[in-house]
Length: 338
Image 1 (cartoon, rainbow, N blue to C red):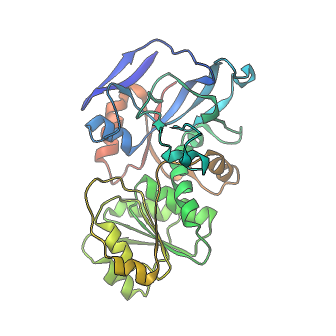
Image 2 (image 1 turned 135 degrees about the vertical axis):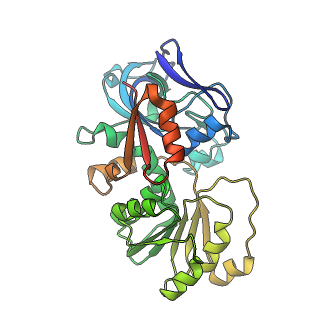
Image 3 (image 1 turned 180 degrees about the vertical axis):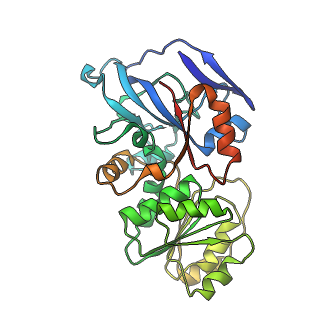
């Protein structure tokens, strides 16, 4: 089989490997489609602190089960499945309280263990979620990106009375827009970014208002509009954003950060406590695949609005470079594997 392997920083090869055999409790997936995420680019460029090389990247993938390991019912062969990349121990404190995404022994497919940019991948049976016939292949491969928004909103608990502000109109910002508007019917969703074309995409995804903050101070602009956001999501992931989010937030607001920067950021306690703000963080997803599958069945979200490019897996370098460089027109890039 062919596998996309990052040998080391900036060295990607398409390598011939043996077709893997599923171990006890595993299934083998013949991969059909995979999605490119920022973390795949980070691994390729040497910016992911968790990865060990060489590594088959890819944690967003969909396919068909073609073999099962010991203890797995053979009736699963032929199932269309989307794979949750989060593998957890099930026994530590985090797992026991329903937070397997921060398991003390966390393994993420495509990061700590070989992922789905391969013609075949073996994964734990419980991580392979059956996709109903009414959900297309393209939508099935988009489930994992939407689980990020599902996880974030599960912390924030949005309501129809909220005014939400999202920093960043990239893929995570776009999925968050669709969740807030399509699932939670939030009264107003505002998206802030510095790329006009991405703001246009946000409007297509359902944003009520967009703000280009290239040459303005966001707080001044919101003050002019008499807007105090009650829910804020940082999907731009820059350390400087948190303090600004605290300053613009309404009293009793909820703020969620998705960023993974190791750089320090300065925040003022008084601003947090005086408004009694709640600050959350969100990593990966905690058992949110069934949630997003349900959203798709009910047509509450539309992944097609995010898919801008599709390449054959043999063009993977071109696909990653498009994802990295074409921020004006590129949102979600898919790879056809088989």
